[in-house]
Length: 87
Image (cartoon, rainbow, N blue to C red; front, side, top):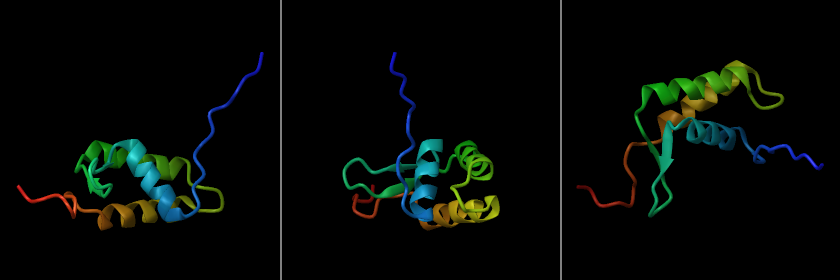
């Protein structure tokens, strides 16, 4: 019987890895219409993302550097889409 292992997506930059971690944890989401990332302002999701960064940083990156990148990416993302009309 052939067994396959689920592979992680290939991440080419530390910023790309941090965006992936935040998205997987549910801390950010993508605007369905325009594709911009939006902060969901969910403290539990943010904490999950920080836990992932601490426990499983990318190869060659220290946990502190991974945490710092997740924080930097999170701080650079707003809570609204830049192209969606304001309500």
